[in-house]
Length: 81
Length: 464
Ligand SMILES: Cc1cc2nc3c(=O)[nH]c(=O)nc-3n(C[C@H](O)[C@H](O)[C@H](O)COP(=O)(O)OP(=O)(O)OC[C@H]3O[C@@H](n4cnc5c(N)ncnc54)[C@H](O)[C@@H]3O)c2cc1C
Ligand code: SF4
Image 1 (tube, protein in one colour):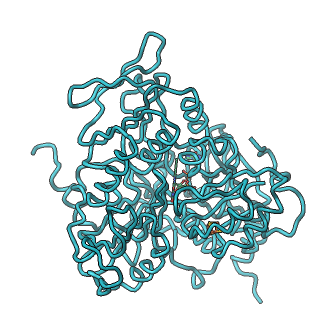
Image 2 (cartoon, chains in turn cyan, blue):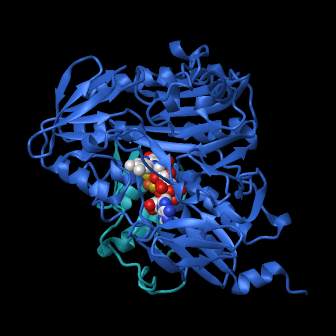
Image 3 (spheres, rainbow over the protein chains, first blue to last red):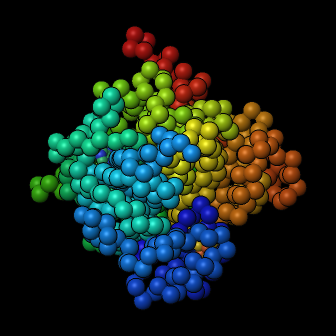
């Protein structure tokens, strides 16, 4: 699953690093490093982290989307590189 | 109710987005969100779906993420026709068509241009093509540089200590690689943050074992018999052996494809109004062509209506959203792009953030923390008001200063008692380099009504 953190917004509260330590990790006192394409098995944890982030800085594939189809499946000739 | 032109556009119009990256994707999402049901085409010269670039100089070089796996998440389905791997090569404003490299012409009713910037290449083409010489902008660059660092080079040379160059140097040190940074200016980050902060950044680099050489340019790169780089020649007459070179000399705007189109596009970007509508060459605003992201330059009310070009992730998102909103709105419902510039960088374990336009600042005052501790807030002043702020591991203060900038609060700030520190008492000159002397990679470029700009124009004619 794809994700991105808006690091302008992120305040380094580290909630995400507690909830999904394989995907998010603090780097230094305040910086955050994350894996932009987490394994599918991490989905539940990543969604929890996104929900728990106090500043809503974590954007995950298709969260605003009602459809259940995996993202990118219907995007014509574009393919996952 | 009468069927308006906007209703018709939304029902069956044609929207074309050129540049399929951060700004292009976010705009496409908002266009659909606004109820656009017509045809939406995204044209991108890279063969990939939109991906995120900031990880390329951070997670990817630290070996914590794969350069081929930074695709941007999708907020919604955009039901677009994708033309990837094909560049737009021309624009016919009268016929309202975009020409593609494969000869096709794509008609539009509304066009969004989000072609961004590319890495400025090493000026000597043959030297730039030596094996082991990189720039860092694209996924391919990221893959190549990560591989080169994995191979354990003996010494990496980074040319240019802007944000990208400094992040690369930081990643090298964290991986235990020897790295030299050559910077023409008197410190890292000086173009974006000035000499006072540049001095802190320089100490940070040296403490972390970077061989930082300031006031130095690289005059030539030298290859071995197999065409791989083996050394660099420096302006002080010395030679440095290195097997990987990263050229971090800033960016060039992708506007060449618009030459001759009549649009107000040039090396400084594409000028647009506060509503993201592009100007034509005559300075008249168009109503069907919009611009967003790194390629745009637009006037900002908070900064004297100067035209700002921002190479900022957050700007690409915010401007794309505003452009998309305006493309799908009646003129009275349009919004100005009044985003306060904001930027982050992560290097040597320090989280660096800024808001506003520090480079407009003539003075800086450390209002919290101290430079010696590498944890502080610096506030920039311009003509008696707060114009920008920077934090080193102090990001939670930034929102406060963003508000100060928005309400044009006075400088020096009256709340000096927040944190009594020796260097927190008084403003000092922010020490930005002369704007007519290029430094490596400032991330905000002011253009338009700047007196400095006029000076460049007036005092550099050939006869002098
Ligand atoms: C290594 C790196 C690190 C960064 N780190 C940070 C950071 O820490 N913080 C921050 O705020 N910002 C950072 N940035 C900047 C941020 O990534 C950019 O601001 C952002 O990518 C801008 O998005 P954009 O869509 O406007 O332009 P771009 O991402 O440049 O996309 C433009 C797209 O248009 C394509 N294109 C160009 N010409 C044509 C044509 N004629 N036809 C078709 N397609 C074309 C390009 O190939 C590209 O795919 C970083 C950038 C890089 C490279
Ligand atoms: S929870 Fe949110 S604010 Fe905290 S570190 Fe994670 S992304 Fe940043």
